[in-house]
Amino acid sequence: DAKTTQPNSMESNEEEPVHLPCNHSTISGTDYIHWYRQLPSQGPEYVIHGLTSNVNNRMASLAIAEDRKSSTLILHRATLRDAAVYYCILRDNNAGNMLTFGGGTRLMVKP
Amino acid sequence: GAVVSQHPSWVICKSGTSVKIECRSLDFQATTMFWYRQFPKQSLMLMATSNEGSKATYEQGVEKDKFLINHASLTLSTLTVTSAHPEDSSFYICSAVTARNYGYTFGSGTRLTVV
Figure (cartoon, each protein chain N blue to C red):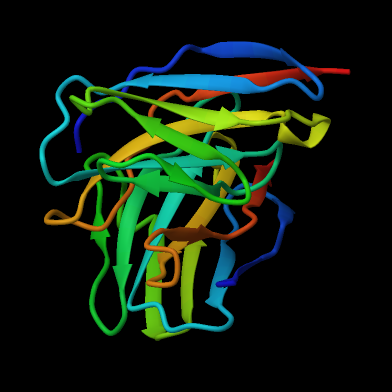
C-alpha cells in the first residue's frame, strides 16, 4: 500500500471543527482512502473511506483533493471523546486485504 | 454493526508460560482475520494474516513457532504466545474484514504483560 504522511499531533478546542490532513502523493488509481481512529487502550475503529468524491457520514466528512494526492478528515464539532490517534490509510482493493498503519495524528481536544 | 469480540482484554503471565488470545466475529463470518501488535507510543504492526482452514501467513520477522495462530472456524481465530518473555509484552489486536462498511472491524485489544 502507498505511504501516507500525517502530522504527528494536532490540538483543537471543544465544539470547534477539526481538519486533519493527509498527504498521499504516490496514490494509485485503485487505492481507496480509509480513515480509522484509535482511542486510548482500544482497537482502531472505522471512521470513513472514499475513492474520489467527498464523503459524509455521521462521524465525519472526508474531503479528497481533485488530484487525490491529499485528503482531509473533517470533524465538524470536536468533543472530548474525539481525542484519539487518527490514521489515514491507503488500501488497494486489487491487492491483499491487510491495512498498513502509519504513524497517525494524535488529536488532543481542549475543553 | 459488525462486532469482533476479543478476549481477554488484559493478561499478566509469568515468563515461560503460554497465553491464548481469542478473537470472535459475532454477527458475521470472517474468512480472513489479521493480528497486529502495538508497542507503547507506536503504531500497529501487522503480525500475520489468518485464513480459515489454512495456515496463517506471517510477516517478516515474526516467529511463527512463537506466535501460533489457529483459524479453525469462520468466527474464531486464536493467537497463542508461546514461552512468553517480557519483550513480548505488548497490545495485541485482531481485526476482520467486513463487507458491511467496506472496512475492517477491530477487536478491543489484549494487553499482555509478561513478568
